[in-house]
Image 1 (cartoon, rainbow over the protein chains, first blue to last red):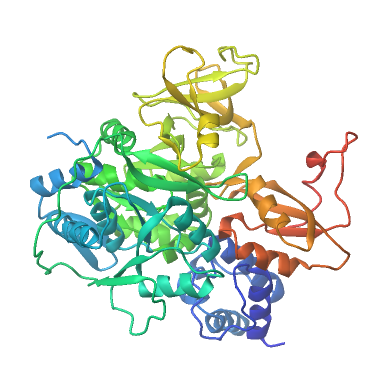
Image 2: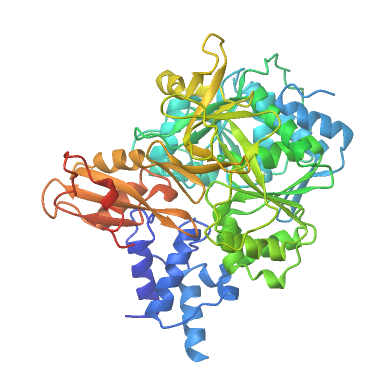
Amino acid sequence: MSIINNIEKYVLAEIVGVLGKKTIDPDEDLLEQGIIDSLGLMKLITFMEETFSMKILDEEIIPENFQSLNSMASLVKLQSQA
Amino acid sequence: MSDYLLQHLLLHSAEKKPDKNAVLFKDKSVTYSELEHQSNILALTLQQMGINKGDRVGILLTKSIEQIVALFGILKAGAIYVPLDSTAPAVRVNYMIGHCGIKCLITTAGNLNALLSDSEEETVVNTVLLFGEALKEFPHKKIMLKSLPLNMKTAAATSEYLPIEASDTSPAYILHTSGSTGNPKGVAISHRNALTFVEMAANFFNADENDRFASQAPLHFDLSVFDIFVAVKCGATIVLLPEQLSTFPVKLAEYINKEQITVWNSVSSVLTLIADKGMLNLRCFDTLRLVHFSGDIMPVKYLRILTRYMNKASFYNIYGQTEANSSMCYPIEQIPDDDTWRIPVGRPFPNFEVFALRDNGELVVRPEDEGELFISSSTVALGYWDNMIMTNEKFVPDPRYPLAKKIVYKTGDLVRIDRNGEYVFTGRKDSMIKSRGYRVELGEIEAVLSSHPEIAIAVAFSVPDELIGNRISAIIVPTAPSAINKVEVAKYCATRLPKYMIPDGIEIRDHLPLTSTGKVDRKNLGTAVSL
């Protein structure tokens, strides 16, 4: 499963409030819509760290890295290249 | 100049400091004279739309200068403002609209579309005032629609709004809190209730025109009363924090630093996030002079981090409820080494009296006594909107003076008095909990879960959490095996409950643990659900 599909699956299943949604557009703004709030973000970070064996640093917890599925996937890829 | 009604605070600051910045939001600002002028136009518009004294007007807007304009415009028109949570499900917003009899809704095209498209039934509001661009297509013929430009700086008022004769005991706003019966309760607060608190707080905390108040709490949360009205009373500046930034601790710390905030007032969980992940070492907090935290228990280890980096600020644990505003505070002086220290809620503010009664009706006086806290003050609200039964249960004649018509608020909070004479919170008489600073009636969650046709019985319970106070879990028993799955339950909740009330952990079982007397064994639920 691709990184994006993996995160999408998690957001759809676990970040509640995604009403009637079956898919999320990779560039859809999840922050503007309030889909990801502070508690959701913390759950998402734990999921990403465990699933992709990565450590998300405090300075990386910024809107630019969590705006959309694409930006989260970029963060994962960036770390795997480092 | 005396302030008899909340809008007088703005009028007087606009006269004294017309060119001072009243509200900042991102790169936008309004001065006091502009805020006065724009809210006058809004008041006139509302009156032209048929809004009269005492009518309820909903505000369905995210943080914005327009939100503050709307609030004062509604008050000037003699109406009652009802802030609505734009992230709450449409069913819940529609309930509040119906229950308060909201006659007009002030919103934007985006928020209105979201409300109407998510509504299962037709929304009951019949007049809408839109900020920003008018809708090109609007199929809802029954709703009267009017638009106001987003930037009203240059708009000239064609005539003045009609000043309203009003008593300071009239309701000024209605704030909703969780209700155990399955629907939120609307707390009706008068001008005098709010002004009593605002005047006291401005003096107590030495607020002045040089202050820059962070406005983090949403308008539907009662912390906003301090942020907005104390700032306006003093001619200070309100710096609105965009909702998105509240999610990111690093951004919150940066905002306090860059915006040169002097007064911060939030629930504890926002501050614990800042302490935990805000990278405070990168920031300078020299302008910050006052930090209020409230709502849930602040873990001492995070308080220690905050006081180390925000070392110019005085920290206060603030205690209160929407029904009586903030009534007590505890100033943080020395933080003990013991990480299990529970910060007291302290002593009452100057214009409050509090007392606690034991189950046998005697006053709590000794350190070993525990009792229910009562609050007496002219801040004690008028009651719950359109709910006399609940009002009479919680707003009761002072049990110490049964013959006088003196009403006190019965909090449901259990307290004791420590050896220094400070009140300490010990628990609740009912099943209300706090999560992320929000009051949550577990009964409201259970009522919603049980309303699902495939759910036979449901129990909601809390699991203590260091960062957010409590997490919520639920165990449900379906009407038939495999009748419903967890995702369906979560989605059902999301259509009826605000996010902070949706259980994090849901477990489906074929029966619930019972005590020997046949009741649900709540004590043994806590470890049952993995989060």
